[in-house]
Length: 461
Ligand SMILES: [Zn+2]
Image (cartoon, rainbow, N blue to C red):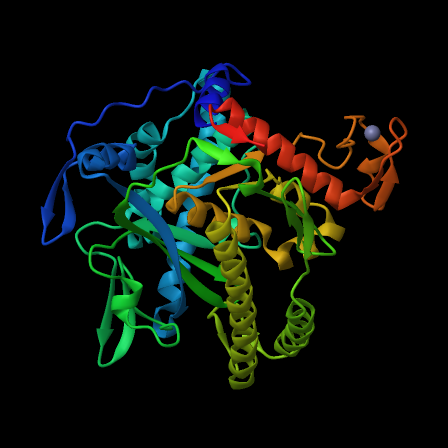
């Protein structure tokens, strides 16, 4: 997949974008200290995980990355965090603007390295406030722009967007770990997260957990992304550890391949070639959406000063209610996703789903709410992690694959089924009656089998 994308990028829409990645100057080495793998070197390289995996090969181990999401209680550091978010957005927009201008003038790409050398220092001299943020935040902001360009060139997304405080893309910043600049710790019995240029920020320790549960021996923090949603702050820590290298089987039974057609009315139709069953949306989704709306209305009636980012006492109370409700909903949803993913990873050898262009669908106002509330992409991310960690396959079928419209019996393509309102149909060619979602699930399953076969995996029917 990655290789295919690179090929498209190097052709490029306007014939640009073909920088080769430089090999790193400092090689990666590993040593085992008390059963824990400690890495040295590897600075300045891009494909660091790949190179670490190389050094782990003789041990039969590999790198495992995962995210750890925590609720922050910033208190006095709120303005510092807001400053970092604002600065990240400022550089994002500046790099994008300069890159567009540079291409117009020179017909060449303004690379991140060149921008950091020739543009950013001047900008920092002009804008004093930019000095209050560490360099990794800017590196990551530029990286996001660059990734957006790559997605644009490979046809995955539209032209890169400017970041805005009214959009999710303008309400976060990411910084990287170096020399203990990011750290989970206890101070006077309370949990804190140390962040560069910000200091120690309180966070909510999940119920029944200790710091050692969040970060066991041998697990390191790679980066931290702080996100603001309304007036709620969360951090997603990118964690890294070393696990036994999963062994992927080369022969699998077709029944062990599980597929899903994700839905709106129901969470999804799951199954293999023989059976299909419905997983309903949890009932609490609606209940909480209603409660949350009521609390948010309450909040909007309370006084809040946009300039100082401070609200009245009643505003604070109402905000706490909203935050608590949001937290509860998110926790329940994650719990639901984890349990379902666990069951799948424990019982099946391969998982096939659609490559949903969730972002594109979000633009559709009617679908967006349902999609956001079922949180498909979070669910699929969890399934992928659990499957791959266990040496099992996770594959997405192309989003152009007409899973709903194709008759699974004779292959006839019925374009009338494009309309989401068509819940069932009879194939005009072979006369088979189809439930829309079940037919889609079976088609995705069959397509999954051919993807696995094309990779050289033997399928027993
Ligand atoms: Zn048919």
